[in-house]
Image 1 (cartoon, rainbow, N blue to C red):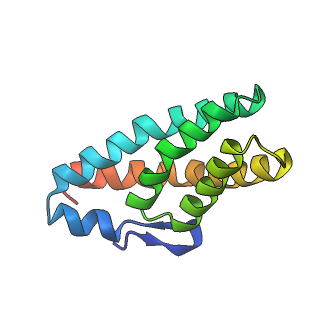
Image 2: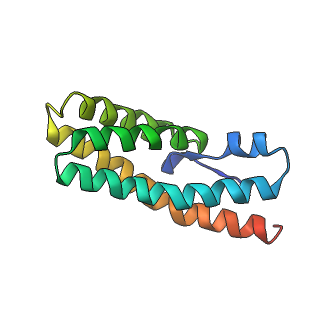
Length: 125
């Protein structure tokens, strides 16, 4: 089974490469992503609602490497733009919000895929 979903900005090739055949490493990495990422998305959502740009920038900064590790380069680029715009005090809040929700949608769509891959690896498939 391929673990590259270009239409969903998801390419797990790097994860599988550094796992070097260790299903346990893949499972643990995916579990960490599944635990941390929704919390970071919620933090950014709340920060945007409260116009707390410092918190939005900080949470976006924490999310950025996870997206790179999990082969989501378009989303990683967008969250970096969100981070930079938030650091600048969100001079164009509509653009920041638009970019963030694009990232949020991609990640939300990928979470079930990652759960399936984790389950397959746990089952030794």
